[in-house]
Image (cartoon, rainbow, N blue to C red; front, side):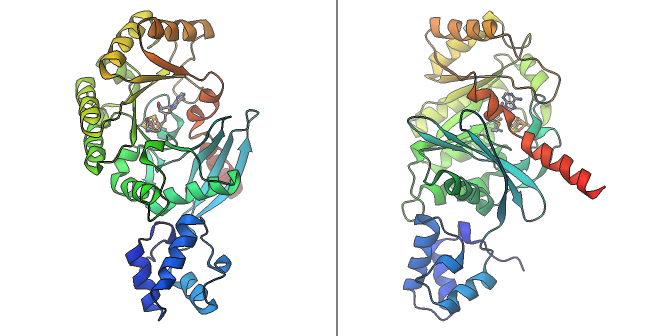
Length: 348
Ligand code: SAH
Ligand code: SF4
């Protein structure tokens, strides 16, 4: 029998557990407070609980299902954390401090089934979905480094969260419900490669999460060269889903666009993207390609700036982070690849 995980337990589950251990119901409230308000998963540190209950918790639950394996700090103070899972898989997350806000970038899957040709995360396919607890524990590892809850959470690490929808939805619930962690959904961004059925499932949740859609192209032929057929949805359907998201949820979407030299960085593409952004009230997030897989090239800086300027001139809101963008979002999957190489080496 697999034990339930502490980091995603509901109030009802914790109440049932404390009753099973012969404890009064208010103990569940104390436990909830430790887990979701004080971000503590180690029963030995829950000092207002009786010793017997602390011991029982350790045998009745998986208190921690992940471990911080390694932390790499970049010059801009961004930290990339390698998190290992109990079965030997690993994922990455990033802690991104900026003068005005602290952002955590979290993973939703070990590997990714979409397999975008420029992305290290998808290169080995999907290893497995993360559990809700494994998603939430990344947040706790980040809090352990930064000392506080982030201002923003973006699901832009490894994996396509909308293809692990039920676990992602559970994690989103614990992160945003006032009884649990209680962050505002407006501070949480779900990024998708444009998986339309998942966008509609997110709409069903009815909460004002931010939706970021990785477009990367303004025509289906160019896009087909970047994203394999199996899980790629047509641009027209993606745009319809974006309209529905804005109408139902009342939030404007963001278009993400990885700039690849000679592929999607022409002025005509910038003009069309600007028209789409205006029409959808969307902000465009330009991400210059960061060397990973697939033999693509990052455009020269002058071409990147020209692309951005055309967007701006045509009335689109644009963000371009030349430094951070390249080092963080884009480097997703690379620490994990490092770990796999190391494991191969260690086992030889
Ligand atoms: N699967 C989701 C979220 C994770 S990827 C998605 O695709 O949106 C987060 C972002 O990183 C995506 O916009 C993705 O296109 C981008 N990305 C992946 N590999 C990259 C690379 N080598 N260089 C730049 N951006 C990359
Ligand atoms: Fe998966 Fe996103 Fe990488 Fe594409 S870009 S392979 S969807 S993680």
